[in-house]
Length: 218
Image 1 (tube, rainbow, N blue to C red):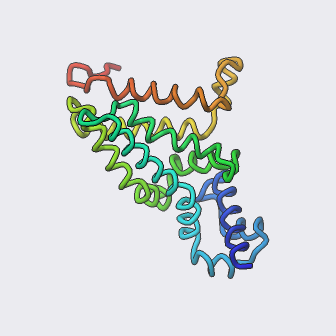
Image 2: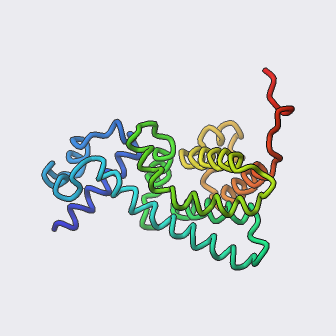
């Protein structure tokens, strides 16, 4: 059936993009692994770029909807004062971590896929990822600006950018941390990892803005 073929192409592309990266994965790789022909890929997706968009959309759109839902719930609960920075960050981070454990997602593929999207250097991936995140980023920027009125806008953008780097680092996995800590730090315990990440980033956002007198001297 056409639906089965489309699903198989999506699943295969997702796995290969996660394993190899977008740039290193060709349509030839995908059709060989999926057991379909090139015409099927062109029929359903037209191009590799459109296939990437479909792969990402089916994963990130539910996450972004949950992010907005969670942020709106936090704002209702907080009332006129608005939610804390930590609560805003929870709304942004936790849907990603929770999705990684969703039964419909391949647990070994999902984190690597998003790690690839956050970290891939190619223009196609970067531009598409920015498009997907633009509306959500604007919504969270507004909430953070309200929670951190003492910070200049550009400082909040910097810290949001660094936060994305933290998420990407987490999603790529933490085997090196497990080795360095001699097993005391285990990335498989998501219920511990997520609050730690929120606490770390909330502390970073709470730091005072840099001034000329705080420049790092090398």
